[in-house]
Every structure is written in C-alpha cells, then in structure tokens.
Length: 187
Image 1 (cartoon, rainbow, N blue to C red):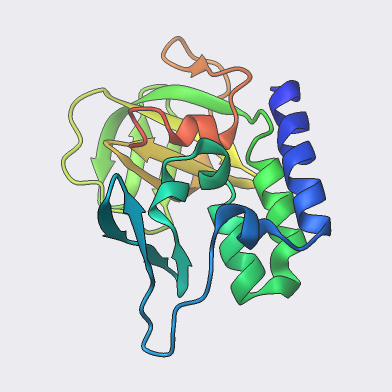
Image 2: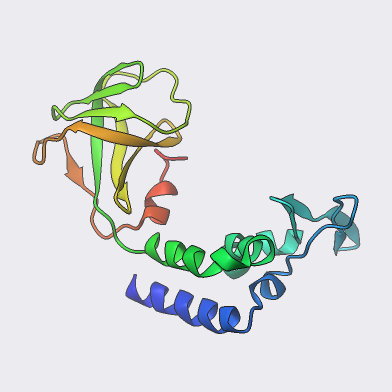
C-alpha cells in the first residue's frame, strides 16, 4: 500500500504542479451546445463521455492511470480552487481504514441491528431493498464518518450502539476505502 501511495504521489504531484491533470487525462470542456467530440478506436467513432460538464475521452476510461485521475481532472477544469482539497481526499481514500465484516440480524426502516449487538441508523442516501437473515455486510470508516455496505449499496450511518468484539465481527486489515468499496458486498 505504501508503494501505491508513493506512485500516486509521484504521478499526481508533478502533473498538479504543472496544472496538467486534465491534459494528462485528455479531459476538456464541451462546446457551446454541451457536446463532446468523438474518439476513433479501430476506425470506429465513439462519443466521449460528458461527466459533470467535462468531456472525458473514451480511451481514458480504459487506461487505469488516467481513470483514477478523472475526478481530479474534472475538479481542475470546473473548480480549480478545490483541486488541492480533492487531491488530499484521494490520498486519504487510499490509506488503510478501520473496517469489519459483519452480519445483519434485523433491519427495520433505516435501523440495522447487527448479530454482534451493534445498532446502526442509515443517514445517507442509498437503496437497500430486502435484507436476508444474517446478510453479509461491511462496516467501515471513511475519514471520521462510518459507512455501511450491504447488497451493493454503500451509505452513511450513525452508530447508535457499538460492540467492539464479537465472534460474528471480523476485522478487515490493511484495506483502504477504495479497496473496500470495490468489494462485491459494496458493488
């Protein structure tokens, strides 16, 4: 993980100092009509994606290095004064965080009672749907805010009651927020 963070810092820092994140990704603002250009791949034209009012070339979405910088490129073009804060957020999302694999005992409206006795209240947006008996889920911290993943949804929660140790609660060590949110339970 340390090496990954160092690589991101090496990639992002020189690009940021030159103000070239958007150029590196290939991001640009749409024309007056809100239209983006097309990219040609194997002699076939594909429209570039318009994400939050910024055009992203389709090839950038398949390049792992560029794809990770799309959010920063959008910020650089739309809100350059917020770029430094966004870089700090991206770096923080790659740091290991406190996380647990847990099971849901009961769900009632926006209240989740876990098998370990902990009680969570959903405060963020996100559709959950039907939750089965002892449904697998993940409770993790994103900065200072607790988040909860279940059945492909991730949302903010307030911890009403917290039980630190229990046989049904397994710690997830060394995973970052980005890694947790890419796990099957969260997608």
